[in-house]
Amino acid sequence: MSDVVRNGDDVARLFRENDDVGCDSSLWLRPLRQLLKNGKPVGQVLALTVSPMNHMRLPFGMISQTRKDRLIFWPLLPPGVNMTCVGERIDVIDHITLELSKERIHTTAYRADGQSVHTTNAWGTHYLPNRIFRLWFLLLVRISVLQKQDMAVQRHVRGRVTDKKRRADEFAAYVRRLKFLNVPLPAHPAEQDYIYFGLYLASDSAMMSDQLAAPILPTGTVDAQIEGWDDGSVFEITGLRFPLDTLTICVAAACPPGRLTTDVSVGLPRRENPPKTRK
Image (cartoon, rainbow, N blue to C red; front, side, top):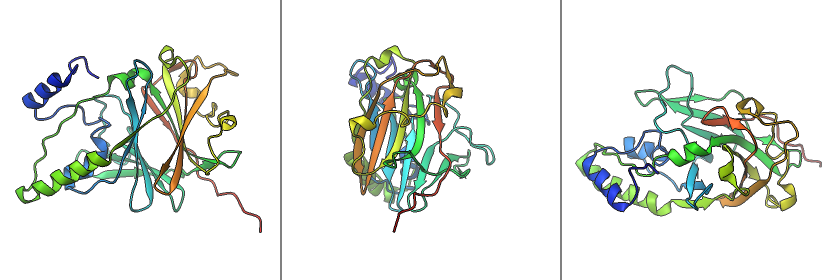
């Protein structure tokens, strides 16, 4: 939370004195883009949080399953980062989408006029050797970025007077349905520079304690983003398993050694065919 926002009185004053509060990159605003812009309803969203210090629960991402059978994840972004997409190139990802029927992944960003841009690049879920987990993506986040994110946001949105009540009702419904899940972290996370997450689709038998080991958080794919991660380094991995509609989602978390060379990094697997079943 910002040093300016210390208590409820400070938040109330911010809201009174400003039309807009917080960055456009805020994790609290981005899942609401379609509701704020076009008045489109938003389904249930789960906020995934961690507590690296002082027992404060800080979100690192939001996840939702759409009516079109897609999973969407909005990762935490650095405050004030330029999210505007120029042309077809995506430098900053707004969200990651998994098309469940095709096991295909694409990323989305937005141009200055609000037009969406998608990139696929042959990404798709990847089965781990144990065939219990299917990797969706990897996420590395500096702990300092978690601490500096906006925790008070406000937007004044222009709209038709006749649509005001419906939009207000949709927003109230979104808030009622919003749920929080805290992902456990290894001991002493505040002593490290970053947190390493892996998000997976899993079978019902997943997340037994003896399965939380390499290669559930692979090293070879992220080494280039880390300084000081020596070969053979051993680190604890914790995890959380939870239902989302008809799916089982697993989040693995670790605080490996070294320093993350960027604020946030996302790793996406190449698409592969699902395992063949014997007849």
